[in-house]
Length: 152
Image (cartoon, rainbow, N blue to C red; front, side):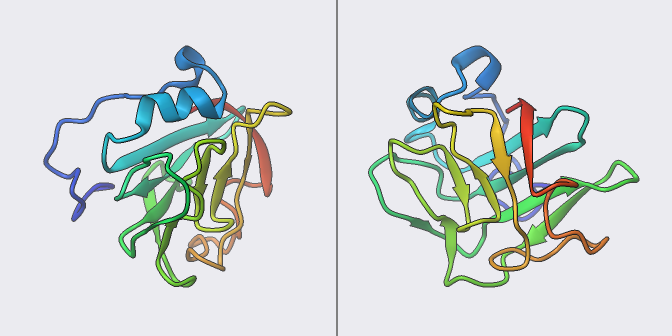
């Protein structure tokens, strides 16, 4: 159900980037994902449920934004079911940044995983600006606005 009505719905999925295997840095991320097309992001913090996003345009690492109204974020509800969060504002941004020297940015602040050298496992999320808020009213994909990732 998570990928229903996306271009990945009927395609076999494969892992192209695993931070624990490939490295927690934006260079490894772009080496693995650039030019591969649409992507689903699956991540988890220490002691959190799974969450992520869908980038229908994928990454190219050439700079700028890859615009799409079809992008969404998702989180795991308390009943264990993945819940999509649709884009609600911000002109069509699927990826606020697609620069080779940054990690994952869906919307300006919906899901940000910079994979930067200072703290590569940090993830931030703010909902309501570019993506709708959670059904439980929380304004982040996770309980806090910022977490340390365990898996990506």
